[in-house]
Length: 93
Image: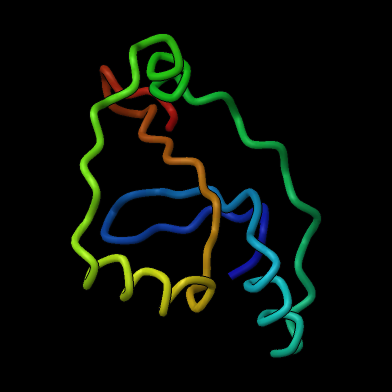
């Protein structure tokens, strides 16, 4: 793994653009020098969502909230670009 590469998983291509601080520290601790982060392309779905009204949210049960808070910041997080532009009706995401 490294920033700025295309990663194919089960036939789907992802372009890794950036990672969070925990992931960066982990990769550097393992001796991997990360490439410079790339700017994230604009996502048409996110742009559309910003124009629509916010969804109604119900509060999660205490068990789910506790599990979320316990495991928070204990994951590797990458930001990626999904690009299936070689098929019709697909936009980068």
